[in-house]
Length: 66
Ligand code: SF4
Image 1 (cartoon, rainbow, N blue to C red):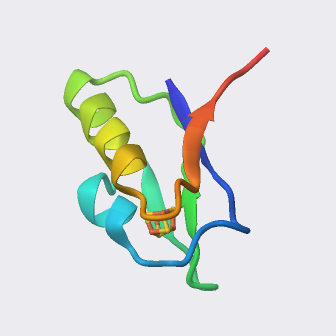
Image 2 (image 1 turned 45 degrees about the horizontal axis):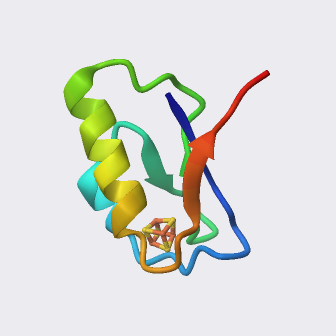
């Protein structure tokens, strides 16, 4: 499972990084990005989903591939 962040929706609150820094990172421009890594580890996946659901602007979604 991978994730993506809609930069137009992100307000840079930092919640996603605080919940799951393995996947989400606030960049120098103040907005979050999702690292292009597969959230395989069960705990990381749960944390990342939690972060996605906690985003105040629903900027995070699952990145579907293929
Ligand atoms: S939780 Fe949502 S709004 Fe906040 S930094 Fe992450 S993607 Fe942006």
